[in-house]
Length: 127
Image (cartoon, rainbow, N blue to C red; front, side):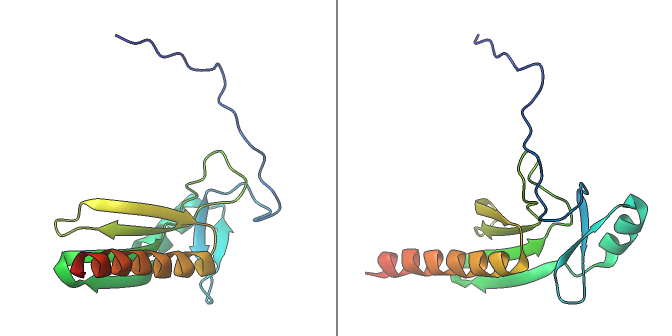
């Protein structure tokens, strides 16, 4: 059996002025831009009913590309919050790929890249 040792304290990187906040909870403003939230109960109430879908494409063969606003910062040790996520799913919703982003624009670009990669794979399979 292999032994694994952990450092006494995990390394952390300071956040930059990207959010001017240490919040891990975010909502979206009317333009789809993330806004830090300090009141977790207010965040939870809004999160329950929020439309978090940024983009969604169902492809032939049961493939799905889904990009969502996460509402929580998933960059636990970095300086820019990761608040959006694109996932690619196979027919039975086995996840095949996942990328995370800080902004809505990055998320939309990532969604488009995922679609392009899948189309390239499908084109190669057809030839």
